[in-house]
Amino acid sequence: MKQSFLWLAVGAFFLGSVTVCRAEEAASGRWEGSVRIPARELKLVVDLAQDSRGSWSGSIIIPELNLKGALLTEIAVQDSSASFAIKTARGLQAAFKGSLNADGTLAGSFVEAGNTAPFVLKKTGPPQVETPPQSTPISKELEGEWKGEYEMYGYPRYVTVKLVNRDAEGAAAEFVIVGRKTNNLSVDLVTQEGDLLTIDSHEIGISYEGRFEKATHEIKGTFIQGAIELPLVLRRAQ
Image 1 (cartoon, rainbow, N blue to C red):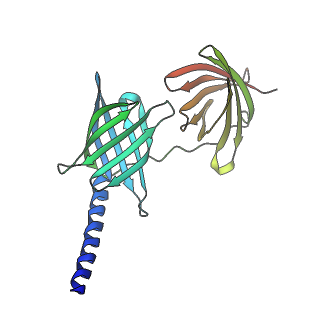
Image 2 (cartoon, rainbow, N blue to C red):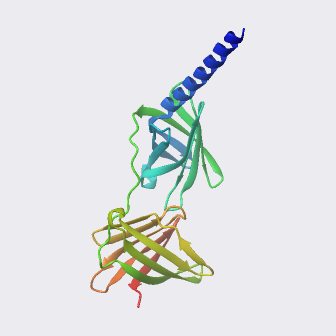
Image 3 (cartoon, rainbow, N blue to C red):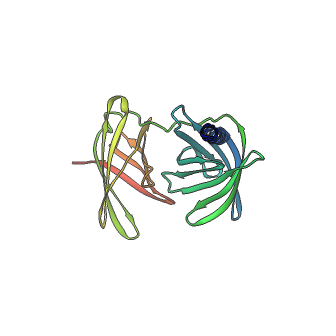
């Protein structure tokens, strides 16, 4: 009798393991479909992949929002459920919560700012997860401390940006905004392409894009916070 119970326990363990593996295999792949929001339909391309250690990674493409290869976070797959989230520098924060269905679809709810809309995805092939962009080195002309200011809601905001190179890790930035209070932004991406400088804080949902003008030694660009875009000129700190 004891031996029978032992075999039942072992069988249950392996059955549970197989179920988990099947769920993970079912979730891994490239998924294409759409989400229906009021007055429009957004096309979606979602890539989900699991590495040998069991960790998940993913990216998403939403052409109508000019979003390509945005990093997915909070990816979770359990039994027949799959969920993931997205947070971009332009302020989009949303979650996808769905079920892996017998017909090969991943369907559920898209939740953004308290609003919910249905989405349906169909697996179209193996995953093609886009790796997160990496910071690049910046020119010597851009290294150092820069200052500027802009106005939001009738109040001035004073900006200080310190740019440094970190050899193989690319550039890093300190981005401080002083208004009613002091905000030290968590910057996770600094890139330079030609004379175009981009600084992103994906955690806060803020970015800056500006072009360095050698003639005036200024970086003329745009401060972006969600849907808000404001002109911001940075000048070398004296």
